Length: 338
Image 1 (spheres, one colour):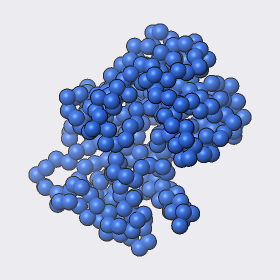
Image 2 (cartoon, one colour):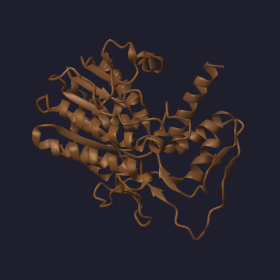
Image 3 (cartoon, rainbow, N blue to C red):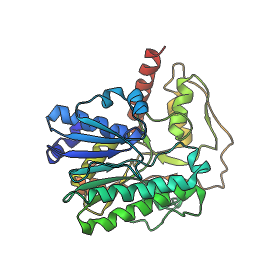
Image 4 (cartoon, one colour):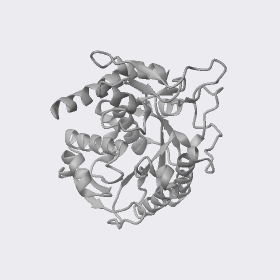
């Protein structure tokens, strides 16, 4: 991460950073990478971190919780009382609720995304020219048409809020609009539309396909696909994601959205087989049904041309290396815990 961002960090020297959602996968990577750069480059950054439960955060991420550069604040992003008037940079990751919440409490999911973003934008307005990074999602575009190989930021599609499968993406897009509207009021708002990721701390409990594959292989089970394995996906390694997000915060254009992902695509079946081969001995791979030659596979692959052209960003770590790094981390933890 530091190798690809070193030139940007001087912009954060002496900064006061507010981060929401730091207990989640993306948020924890951003906080950890910030603290690493802070120490390595002697930046003098102080980070205020909003979490729902301090005990849970400290238990899961003790090395981050005890950092002298971190100040924990407990509260709900929609209503938390924050120390106002001094943050130079805000990183808004909060929106993640338990996976089942989208089905059981859909209105709360939408409310956390939309009202939480509005609350944090109001906080940013207390600062003079505060930089604001919104951790958004590639799902804002809605389903990717089969004839579109890579989704660009100019794609006209928008997620449909009436479709339960697209509710999350629709809420993320409305949250982006709040930020875009704040740019004339002095908030340097940038949106990071994150596509699929892989890396240490990725949940293995059913929310992410690649996480499920890794969880099966780690347990020595057959890697099972719930479908036919034909959907086409790509995965960005979390360290690259962190490098991208900090660069977007510090160097991205105000009001702009950037896809954050990889263009190195493969099918879910191929990804499952790559994961299964990491185990020793390799575990079997099974799918729920065989592919239908007449069907058109779904796609979820971004174009990263804007980030590449404007900011020199790229997916530096290829998928096989990303999977190996994640596997090695999981195995080290598995061995350490017996």
